[in-house]
Length: 202
Image (cartoon, rainbow, N blue to C red; front, side, top):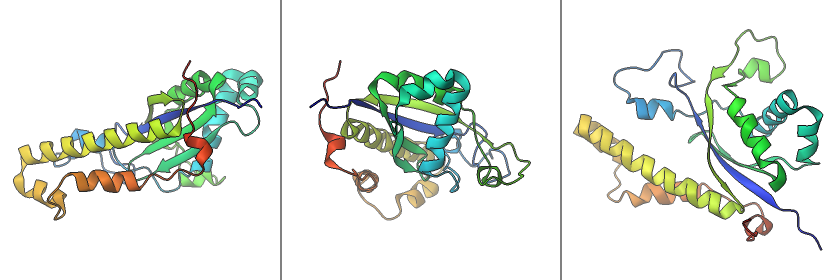
């Protein structure tokens, strides 16, 4: 039996203009590091993200690019609006096409336009950054958890350097920074065992 090989892309969504939920631009009391990692609007769902990627592939690579994905070959296995992180599964032969399409995407459509309404808003400017390409979902999860741990510690250090009181508020009563990391790890869920079987990395 031939097993279809997949690749898992760990993607981070960045907002150079700050929080997409707020009409205000970046303020002085919010560090640039925190503002660029703002949460994603709730109307962006895994299904909508997959649709946007397919549309971008169709625009840039035509029918050939869509055909490389195969039937049901592209899917968003994990998406967290709170951390603006996604894990996208695609056929191994087409992961560079998906990566290129993500690089061309520069905005998230507004809620009215994504629902098919006549919205005049062009959407929220953003950057889709591919952090890792792996052969198993487990490796993508481990990388996401490692980066979440690093971002938590980095943000705490920035806030501690600026104001000790704000840093204490970020601790939320936790004495061990690892508690935040365990909470981030618990947010991941593997949908089936086939996703974590080891592939040959070639």
